[in-house]
Length: 215
Length: 390
Image 1 (tube, each protein chain N blue to C red):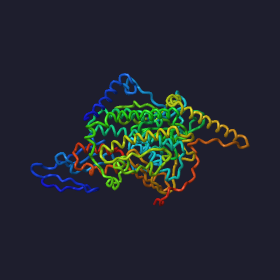
Image 2 (cartoon, chains in turn brown, orange):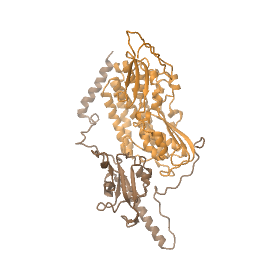
Image 3 (tube, rainbow over the protein chains, first blue to last red):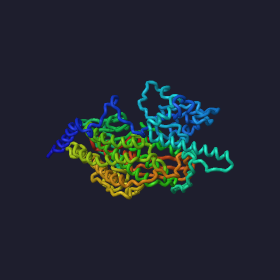
Image 4 (tube, helix red, strand yellow):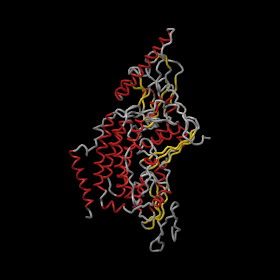
């Protein structure tokens, strides 16, 4: 019968309308500013710098100003100037530190590549997304004081990931201490386990998939 | 324009429409639809020449969303291009990532662990669901069913996007695949969530079809509109659901059997007439096949690493050579052609976007149709301007 398809469709609409009053499957929206959905643990937004100590964030930054993230960042939104001198870091080791560390969040595309390439676990992704501002320029250019956030905050937003990172850093530190001890004694000990990202072994050069070599 | 205008035949098929030019019918009218037209799915512009309401000429104009994607690819490292591929076809970032990762893996001879291959299939099929459900919603929006089907479709899409967000960290810009595997492993909870969505999606499709597929207005608007012949589709290089709607059995998942697709049992739905209704139905049927693949892949997901231990993240320099990696994206064949000269950046980085190639036959499909039909024909092509203009 002509029109039966139309009526059938209207039946579905009616079912959804009535269902939205009692079935959570059919009413999936939230009243946003009052109600907020829980962010998944893996959610990422702009990066921040991890500092070991909340009271002295600038003194305990994990960043050593190696500028790898600056080089790898696809939209080139990171600007780093490293120090000429060395300062003790959170573990007391003398380290170079970033004098300037700026991230232009108007350019950043939250791709997480800086996090992946950082060998020192110093830069991580934040979860703050309500960052609208009326100023297009300076308010979106974050300097190192605005970027630094304590490790406890990192544990708060990415608990699983942060626990893994802490375990890895601890293992690295222990290995370094053992190496130092071994260097003090005449007998050489086992080499420390290197950080996986810092000194990954080169993959064997496999033949390129067919075709002529590039000019 | 006045008097008898010469009719320009379509460059690809030679089709043309004879307009009547007498004083009673008046002149031809040239209408510029877009780039800021609600029906053109982004910043796409159609210069339409009309005789009354009939289209006698259609010139697509694009480039309003050009972002220099290919040149950027030559100036960034191999890894650095990965987040940019998300932004090509911003509905299907997972399949774009996969196509690019496949091209680089071919170039470098990089093996991929089995678990990563399965995860890629799962994510690609979820992406297909997401893209096709969007298309079904937008196409019906174009036919005049404003709001309701689109909102129902978006409700389901949102569930898949939540899955992507909890896995990769971002709803649409996933940046998930890596050369030699995937970035993060899927937890058992995530897999359970994916299984729930897969189980419930069929029920949603039934409801959606009940809502609209049998609707008489929808049939009248789409059947026989914008028909495409298989010969023209093949010679124009059309791929994806649009090609299969004309009845040509060509699906890269079967032809190339890349990844682990050869292990799954699924069928390739084919259309009969190549019209807008067929293009809509093909998408619905493909979603049902995708559910079938997901039902097989999710329980079969093997344990193991998701990243090849020898894979390199930083300082990746493949040997000199060239490679073309292609997969069956939701819109058609998405491919990346790379030439390496041994440096950290590709020497040449070329994208084969399905949207752009599928758009080339727009004029042939629209000639002789009314201007209101041009809107739904364009809707059924399924374009994303991020990919057309790059």
